[in-house]
Image (spheres, rainbow, N blue to C red):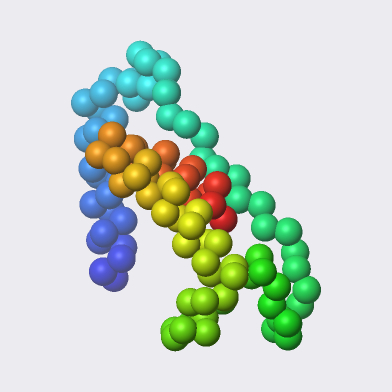
Length: 104
């Protein structure tokens, strides 16, 4: 019952916004300048746990052994190299998504 009321309120609010913007919804006045969302393609790997991680694997966990793993050190270097661009005040949210997708 609670979600039904919430849905009715959202529909009513959408109707008010539509009536305020006119019949066309206000979308034909200007074109979108938004960047496309990044496509993250992760190739399928082997099924099951990795018995022998290599230097490109990033290990999760805590402690010196995990922190000193070659893949984790390499990952931290990549993060450090892109940190200033990501944290810049002029960086938009979608640009941050592109930066993160490029890392992964």
